[in-house]
Length: 68
Image (cartoon, rainbow, N blue to C red; front, side, top):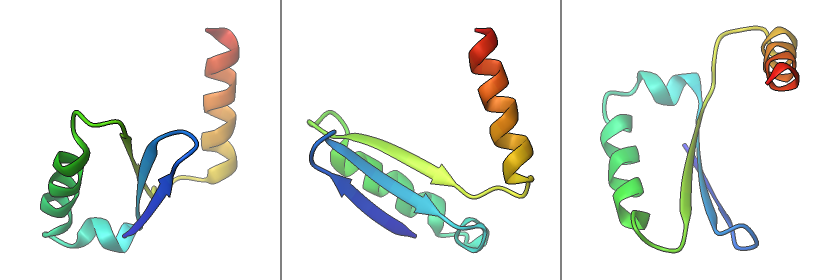
């Protein structure tokens, strides 16, 4: 798990690897961290690694956003 604080956007980023997601304690820790900043001046974003092909996944997101 990696935490990144972005002062310019008032964002806290929580990055989870596939290995992090297999750990049974990770969800509880993410919830705890989110509650620390809940209702404050920071927005919390949680990023979870996936198993799909990066190019295909990014292409799908871009095409969806262009259509909408």
